[in-house]
Length: 427
Image (cartoon, rainbow, N blue to C red):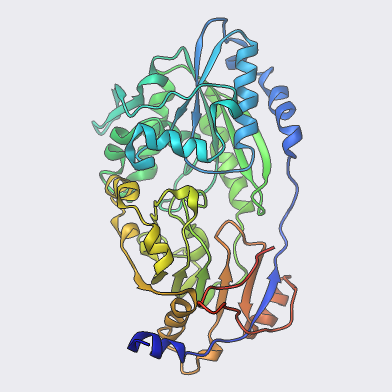
């Protein structure tokens, strides 16, 4: 046994308990989504104005969210019902390794296959320059979308993991960054995340002014990751409606009841979880450490990377320790373009790598500056998308109860197999 393994093997852990948080569970069932969308579309001028023979571009982003496939399919079918020809374009900036093949693969891994959405996928990194904003930066648009007769925006609306503004993740950002592809993302990130909110608003409004955006479809999720609302809006209403929906979405944002931790263990990160692998709004590792961040965690451990991320471990740099298992899955060509484009290079840094889940968690406990390791305030979560069921150290029991969380187990030792792999389920 090495010095590192020998040292970490001796670190004791606190016992843990399984807890369950309660959130507003109201949502739209998948079987009802198509009718929910169609009932709104028939009232939109942008939809009823679609003419036979027109080629209409639908956007597909890089994030998984509830309703993505059925909503996109419903819109595609409705467009075809007007006699037009819908097609899907990846609207994801520099993701997918900043290649057409990579972006198509990302869509397909999210279930957005041509068969599933009833529309062909036209993936390219080629863009057209369609204008510029007041600070002189150019406005780019995906070439396939630009040459279509109309564009329909479909995206989830939520808070961003790297900046704050009137518009964050949603339709406006999809016009500025997503449809701008690598060229657009590079220009708008160039001056840093501090100016991103202004860039998204300026570029989004310019795209709305210059191009035939027919309408937008915005989805917001509840605390369980289910579609709480699906809103179809006229192009002229997108700026006002998206700002309102962002406020509503923030009210659903699931977070842990505990704001201060010594150690947080995360079972998995990935691009299907968050743009930064783990939602910085949940873990408090927000770029620039703004004053309004109320979550403070001394040490963060990441145990694994989701398969759908294709080796894109963007966001791991905000953790302190990772496992060898995660490290072995990393593919720099998949996430270095993302980091270089966004200028958030810290997200791509490699934390300390340790052989197993057990040793990685032990390292976090050992370096959490505590006199008694068994008194560590520790939480273990599946990912930042699952704030429903997770585990906390037994010294947080009363805090959990005070916040209305259900206690679903007696205190027990953290379970590992003979190779040091964590043995927990999060249901």
